[in-house]
Length: 293
Image (tube, rainbow, N blue to C red; front, side, top):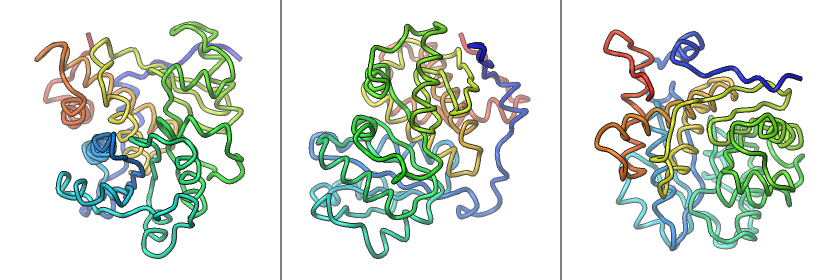
């Protein structure tokens, strides 16, 4: 198969379009984000905000009981749920119903303990989620989880180091044919859509490339914003590969806009807030389409 990737451009995104938002938050999809820890409570907040900024209608944040109270007062738009006291305990009751009904469930942002993360990924998967997005520690434990336990629709958002762990060897250089071949191997191995620094690959080998983005994206929390945007797009009902490509382009283009103004040194929270105008620049080009640098 050719290593050539299709470029993700505003014209392609307009051709793909987005699902009709309808007239209710219930028609724009529900996102559940599972993560957080005492050390990194902000990651799940960034991911959750990003999911809403790309148009998801409803948001639930599922966190350890130790940080439930502090999370609840920071992001007022979200419903807050507590994980079981022990990660190995099954998820039951109302939380189980919420996860099963979600359009997309993101697991990983802010987690910092591998064994607990693995047990949580498995417990979430056992609630019969329809679309699972893995990021951060959620990716680190994936090689230790039986793929058959996970839903058919699996979206992975690794950085280069995480992709190398999934691959079992060093990932090829960015922009190289070897990089695309390596990501295709990961996608096929895990039967997942994979996004790594703007390269999006599906299990059948098709690939797309986002050319936008730059050094400004290398800031703490940037990956959490991207993961949340992916989950938000997937919850809206896009085909999974298009959800990932839309989110990756929006995230990178938001970085380009912020690099121009105010300049290098913007924060991940700025990226999340910039997602909405970036999307509108595609959907409403008469307002002035943004052209990446």
